[in-house]
Length: 124
Image (cartoon, rainbow, N blue to C red; front, side, top):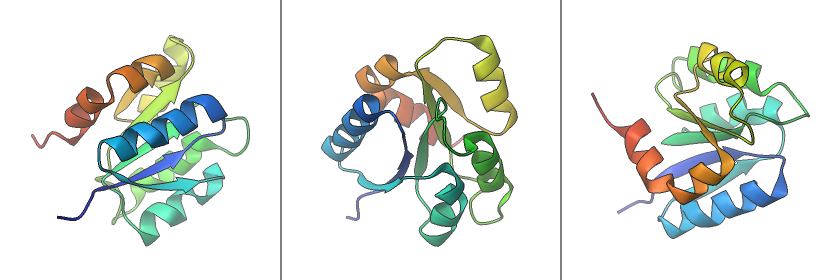
């Protein structure tokens, strides 16, 4: 059986590397993208089962990249988990407006990753 692919974008080293390790423990293949602007092309080239993105990134426009992914015919179905270090409602609202499926704090993401993946991958 082929392992599902997770596309991950992060700038902050600690939650990013922990997330990659946790995904690999859950038997996901992980493709990391170093620049937010490269996310749409990476998602188009090798469509992932899920995208996890650091919403607090300072370089590049993560929201625009997610918006492009959600607008693409081949990638619009990809669920997006956005992670952040804050509970700021404005951050969550802006993320949902561009198509982020679920916004989670860093620590909660790592602690409950299998639950969050099940939630966003659930077929209704």
